[in-house]
Amino acid sequence: MNLGTADEESAQEIHIPADIDWQMLDKSKFFFLGAALFSGVSATLYPVVVLKTRQQVAQSQVSCVKTAISIVRHEGFRGLYRGFGTSLMGTIPARALYMTALEVTKSNVGTATIRLGIPEPTAAAIANAAAGLSAAMAAQLVWTPIDVVSQRLMVQGGECPKIPNSSSTCKYLGGIDAFRKILSTDGPRGLYRGFGISILTYAPSNAVWWASYSVAQRLVWGGIGCYLSKKNEVSSENGVNTFRPNSKTVMAVQGLSAAMAGGVSALITMPLDTIKTRLQVLDGNENGRRGPTIGQTVRNLVREGGWMACYRGLGPRWASMSMSATTMITTYEFLKRLSTKSHEC
Image 1 (cartoon, one colour):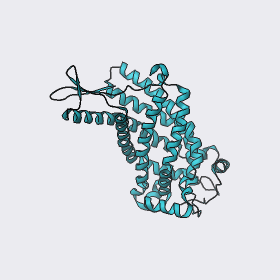
Image 2 (tube, rainbow, N blue to C red):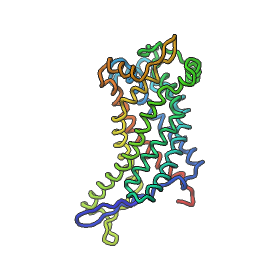
Image 3 (cartoon, one colour):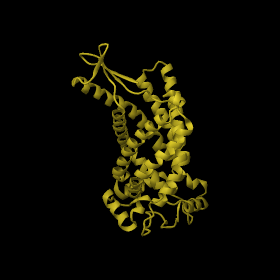
Image 4 (tube, rainbow, N blue to C red):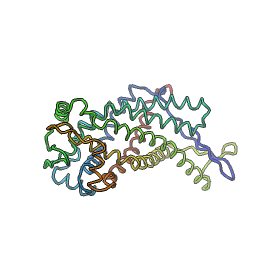
């Protein structure tokens, strides 16, 4: 992929390695290596997700640092990994669905938009947005039940504190036990609590993230091109200033662009994520009571701390999404290059 930028004195061109599309991938290698790489990423970032979830279900605002100290003091470091086994079991099939939908949609939509005569930068943003939307919707079919179970486990503290507005204490012995009890109490519907708002949270968030990532990359590369041109650190080919970045530079730009897109997505979708977490953690039908509706959840949050209560856990979520986006995109691009068919290299 070439990115061209205009300069008052001369043209400049940045030669970026071409994108690897779905047809160029060795699928078996792609899924096997992807499962291993993303499991490692999930393990690294999981404690931040636990902190975010604990803050979202708390009835009062508690800082991220105090929450972390409290967990470690009362539950040990294992408390930061509550529900991780369940989450990991769901991550592998959910990631497989996500990556398949992402690459297939991106390839097909990208080709279609180019054929319609849409400029390449706009076509790339549209293809990325459509791919992010379809990937998130596909992954939620697996991820929502896993999310419900793992989040129930996350909020079970070592001292078994009562979950706000819920009759739950430390009543789950593990992921399988939680799955069985939720299924027997609420049926399959209980495992898909918050599915609709999960789609409303993650589908637009992914569409915004992938589109923003595409735009951010071009902005960053354009800035690099202008900077290098002024420093006279580019070579000239046929009167055009040309820059061929090495793999480390490409990875750094991808990581920076991903962090920028992740931060924006976290800020936009935070209230929806807080409502979703509350719906999934609080009990459903029990002792004749029905679980809270979206409206009731919002009213409870506002009653507890005003509209800013919807942004509880923003710090950990911002950090989690930025770090996750950076590690995910660099890992993902590395995975695609590792999985390229030998005759395509």
